Image 1 (tube, rainbow, N blue to C red):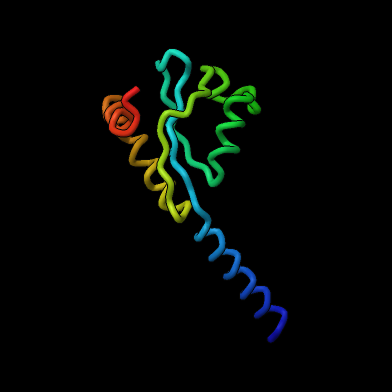
Image 2 (image 1 turned 60 degrees about the horizontal axis):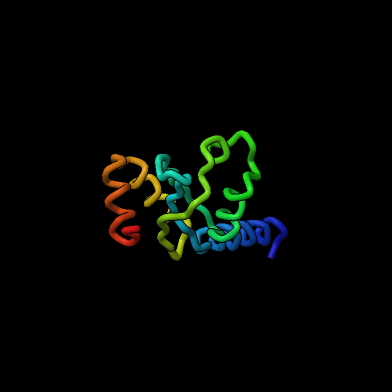
Length: 106
């Protein structure tokens, strides 16, 4: 196999690995439940930790003190999580609240 063929094979393996990476879509809120933030990640515990620690000072979640995880879904592939995130973000606030209440009534 030539060097060019090996590189191409390596790129295909990398692409396949990225597609197989699991993903999560999540919704977080602030202390008073007045702000909703919808996000997507491949590592939910790490991402929640980053939100709580305000690691990104100029971010939306830091500005509005969004640090309480209230909803999440898991997916076998990150692409599916991204698709679901777009669906949730396109919905109204009422639809998001109904979705949250369906699994987390408190």
